[in-house]
Length: 121
Image (cartoon, rainbow, N blue to C red; front, side, top):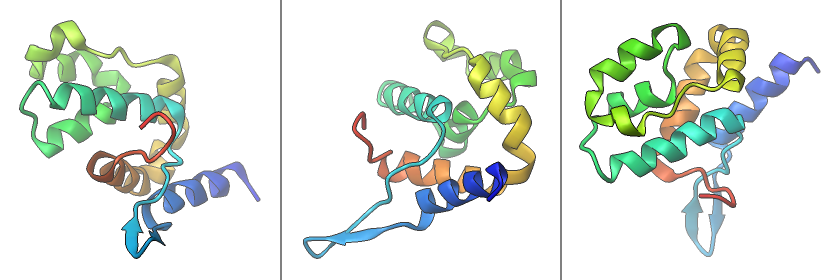
């Protein structure tokens, strides 16, 4: 199985691998890369302090590295709290964003709404 297919499977699990625990639905455990999880945690933290639209949250989690300053400027109240885009994120984005863009976006939406459901969540 190729690396791209494994990555695709992980993202699909992060969206669709729901379970039932004690008669209640349980969101899937996020299998997002750590560099994306870090940004989800950061956005969860700042969203409790600043009113952000859902599309703004997504843009903060998945910014285009080539437009980092533009995103930072448009969301100016966050200047002091800006989470710089890591090299790991840049590498992931450049290698995977075209293949997995829609699925990645869906996995991020699930994580923002229902949490990462991992040990650090």
